[in-house]
Image 1 (cartoon, one colour):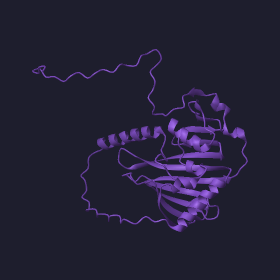
Image 2 (tube, one colour):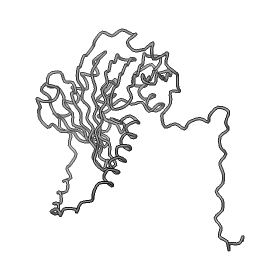
Image 3 (cartoon, helix red, strand yellow):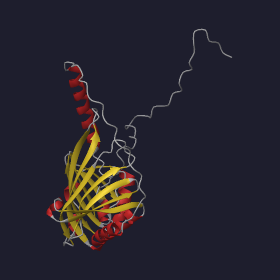
Image 4 (cartoon, helix red, strand yellow):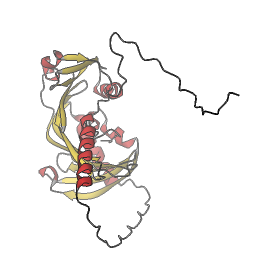
Length: 302
């Protein structure tokens, strides 16, 4: 369950919400009566973090391997994924947003993800031949040919259309490989009886500059929650992924991984949302103009 840079990345709408809310808060602050600042005691300097030698504890590795093996052995699975991610506000304090996805997967070539959250709902379908991203509210759909495996399809969807699911390292064919490739540290924390309503073993690990804490079921060996902080994030924003309603090897029919309603939506290009827009029909691209030379009234040509 290697958490990549794009893990927990929220919808584009969230940036607009944060910006709008930030402007309103700043305006409210600027129009409020000014008050004389109170004198506060000098804050104590926090002790510097003590550098420790990277360590891979055998018990932590054993638990990670057991959980990944349980996931990899499942021919099909369904679960609910709830993501909470923090995003900086204009005030400097982080705001939290959430998404909830109902996931059904069948190896090696089928996936359905229905997502609701703090933004537009979305649906994603992959049936082994095509992948389809659908926006129900706008009734718009993007359809593209897909590779023959789920692992390859997730890579193509990310690179071609910036589609990424926070839980994709749970559904890949070899979850442990994604951890082991960049694993720098792993240690056992202890047990908890709070998360998921079951007894869990807590493990912390560092992979690829992401510090992760995972709660693994003592009995089922399934991941029930993950928390992540990126090492290069100066704000140390926190991200959380909760996994519940686990069902391994359910019987799922093939028509579960497509949608007739979605195929009838308005078709758009399967492309990244940050791709440059093409010129409007009947118009020519605006020619680039050279900047005028900077001169002064008394300047002369040499």
